[in-house]
Length: 79
Length: 236
Image 1: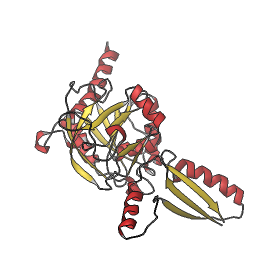
Image 2: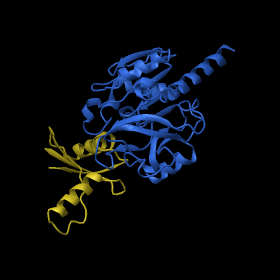
Image 3: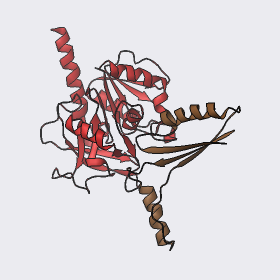
Image 4: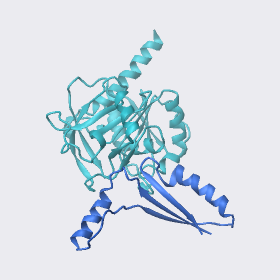
């Protein structure tokens, strides 16, 4: 099993990195970019086959450690 | 007074903090992050640096160090804890202080002297700072932009828990005086009980005129004054 975790800055949090990438895209001539959000991507390889158990554990880990709920949102997928 | 200064892998302002405390005539002891007792500490300094290479998020790994469990307990018992720069980040990640420190608005690592205005002089970290006195101290960080949600910010303000903010030489909290984009120019805060504080600037690097400023001493002298008053009260 593999877990994929995508962590992005919360909408209310200043994201200067995203803004800078957006500006660069515009300078390069790419049009229609409304916003860019730069985050993190984690891949976690898991032993075992119990998806639900893995989800519960990783959900807790995301909340306690892998993301900071003050400034970040996360999305967890298990496949 | 016994100061304990924590040492994580990649702490790099620990020796500066030791030097500052000894300069003021007090005892400073380094404590490796794997230790789980603070011993005879009267105050703890969580120093600056890049603990654990800033992996994942600044301070995110350091907070799980055994020594941080002892620091939590020490703080719960009313002990004085000061987090400087990366130490401030560690204290927010550990939940000892609210909010978070994120990437500077400019995306630049800023290394310069700034001015700090003291907003609350009734804390153990600011009681020796004369009214109206601006502190000239250095900053050196890439992720010092203070963020907290609206509710947290309102509480910090209403309880006078914002200890310092960035201002210009005329004491104005302008946008250009804000080196990192912090909400309301916030440079340092304390917890509800006022025994745990964190700030991004480096008072320990501004304790002697040779270094350009001795204003940082006032923060350590405030902590020392609290300790000496407590000792006198106990002796009486």
